[in-house]
Image (cartoon, rainbow, N blue to C red; front, side, top):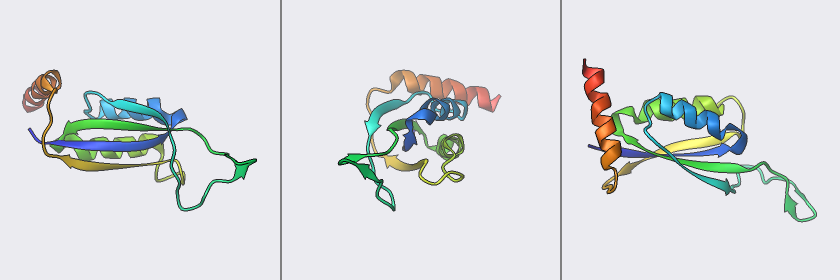
Length: 117
């Protein structure tokens, strides 16, 4: 099986919606890293040296290659990345090797068999 890693940087208020959308689109799991920080085109304003910005989370999805685009689009839609500037970004990377996915692969194979019926 070939895999993609989808990385989504999301406003923390939308993380649960993004995770639900990814699962509905075919993701079988996720890892969330909380309280990440980033900077976009414009620097956020500061107050007494403290950045005035909402928290962000990083969601990582290791998914089957053929489902990656659907999951990527579902994540972007749930996070409103195109509608609300600064709400988040998502992208995908090719994965060369992965170890420790035995239960995920079994679930993916079962899902593929169901899709074929």
